[in-house]
Image (tube, rainbow, N blue to C red; front, side, top):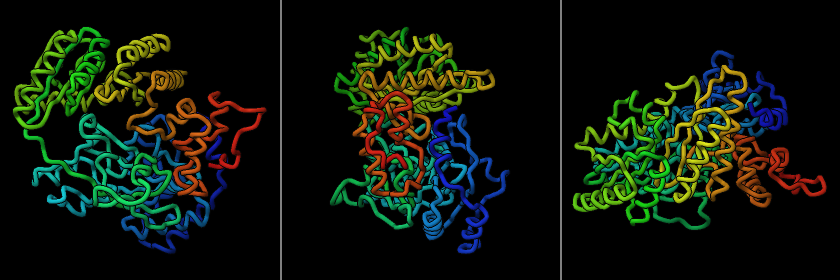
Length: 499
């Protein structure tokens, strides 16, 4: 376990009078649901990254904006940290609570406030499920494009906080590209509107700054998203390869040919077999890797693009090419990919889902390097990722009941992320940094950049009470991690260390 995190955050926080805080909350809102018994708190001790667990001081489940405002104000006055949580499906420990803090659960804000088919927008509360937006927009021939694999459960507030993507983000963008406006509450309960319903808004682009800020800058209370017309048609090609390197090169070849698929996904043999056993999608289980390439748009364009992609894939060395015969088979192909994570979970007692991004041209070399690291650490790795935009999701298989295996999995994951940085990529593409990747932030960014991040945090949250200890490492932490130059034993800007 990453003990340094607990020592630096929980150890630095002042003790909180739990009974007094509980009394203050109930005195102001007698009907506010506040969980405080141990058995009530346990279900909230982690998010989707279940290897890290902390029991929160209190869990608050508000139903109205004024309750959220009041909780923030009371916690601000008493210097109590607050961690906001949506559906809890995040995979980086971003919603991990604090022993000395309040967990603010926004899941009950789950109303779709407005679907405007003429403006092609939806105005929703943060607890609305990602898929529910598309379902509500479907009668108007519209949908919400970002579609993370957890879209049946994940909430739009969490998508904004993590800047989530999905299998179609190559063509249609991440969450940040599909937002118009968010309503937020600051740490002291002040209401702010970032962005607008127009295509642009005056001043700095604070909407883009806030998207992906992982709960460090404010609490989301409302989101306005763009809706897109459903494509007239969509076709999926499945290509099998006898090596992951060939599949990786094929990805770059498709983009180099000037074709932007609606989705371009890759799975290696371990992931293929797991998904096929689980979903029966019709995958070729003897292939070392497969690509799923979806082309959408008007019928004539899709027909031409399918022919061009076939030529590219054949030239790249595909051993088998298949086009989904109908909509049912297309859905099955995607069901296998979208269920790859739970499918791999059947192969091992535990797995560690990584999230890094690399330039497409580096795919073959990085996949080869991951295989070498897998052998070095003695842990199997299943590769499933958004190949079109280089967003990799290596799944490291381990058994937490075996002494040392979790630590080896963490170490292997760290090496994979550092490899991503080395080839010009990033330590995350959509899962966020949270607690999981905070050490690798030290490898990604230099001292001046981290100092600027802390300054942005301080502008929104001077006391460092919102989700402390996540996303942005302290300079002291980076020095201990061995990724920061310390001049004559002195850290620069020590005044920022409190964050």
